[in-house]
Image (tube, rainbow, N blue to C red):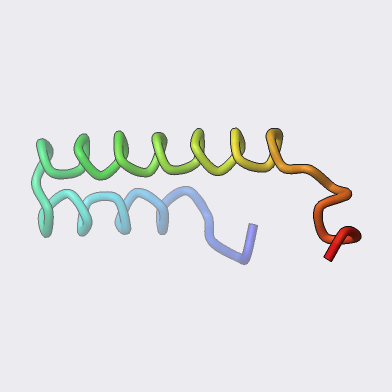
Length: 54
């Protein structure tokens, strides 16, 4: 995984936790999850023949 091991991931997580704080990380994760959900929904609802009609 890009040459990043578990110790490096833990250090990155701790730095992010120190920068943003616990509550802010929860808000960011909720927003990211909602964005991913909306993106997947739009891909599922997209009409593949729409581009061909233009």
